[in-house]
Length: 334
Image (tube, rainbow, N blue to C red; front, side):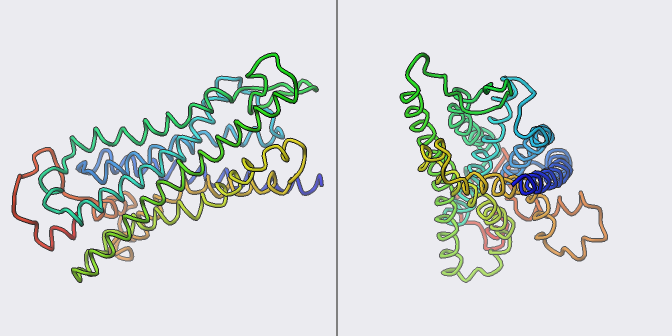
C-alpha cells in the first residue's frame, strides 16, 4: 500500500510539473501574441481570456506539488486554501463557459450573418465576456464558504471541507449536513459547470454542421477546427474527473465512512488529466493552424498568430452597417 501511494505521488508530481511548465510557457505566449501582437477581435478576445484562465491556474500548480509531497498537509494558511481552490474551480467554470461563448458566437455568425455583420462589435464582446467570469465566481461561493484549513487529532493541518461550519451540533447532524452539502455542490458542479455548457457547445456544433451541409460550404468548416479541438479536448480531459466527483457526491456518506476507496483513488488520477487540459490549447492553436508544415520554419509566436487569426472574425467597433448579406468568402472568415 505504501509503495502504491508513493508511486501515485510521483506520477502526480510529474504530471503537475509538465502541466505547470507547458501551461505557463504556452499560455504566456498566447497572451503575448493575442494581447500585444495581434489586432484584437471578438474571437481573439475569447481565446485571450481562455489563455488567462489557464495561465493563472498553471501558476498555482507548484503550490499543490508541495502539498502532494507533504501527503496532503497544507502549509499556506486558510486564505490561500480558499484562494487556490477558487482559482481551480474558476479555471473549470471559466474555461467551459468561454468555450461555450465562442461556440455561440460562431453559431450566430453562421446562422445570422447579417446580424453578426451589423452588431457583432468588439465593444459588445468586451461587455458580454464578463458574463462567464461572473458566473464562474458565483458558482465558487460554496468554496468560499465551506473550504478552510482543518486540523486533525495529530495536529496536522489540511485544506478541505469545514465540518464545523454549523457550530455546536451533534456529530451525526454534522455528518448529515456535510454529506448533503457535498452532494449538492458535486451535482451542481457536474450539471451547471459541465453538462449544461457542453450541451450548448454540442447544439451549436450541430446547428453549424447542418447549415454548412445545406449550403455546401465546405471551406467554411476549416475555421472551426481549432474551436472543435478545444471543445473536444476539454471534454476528454474533464469528463472522467467530473464523473468521479459526481459519484463521490452521490456516495458522499459512504466515502465519509471509509467505503468506496476506489473513487478516492480515481479522483487524483483523473484530476491530473483535467489539469493537463490547461496546457493543451496553445499546442492545438499551433498544430491545427493552416499550413502548419510551412510555419515550422517561422517563429512560434508567428505560428500562434496565424492560428488565432484564421479563427477570428474581422470585427471592430467601427463595423459597417449593411443590410446586404455578406459574401460566402466573408462568411467563411467569420
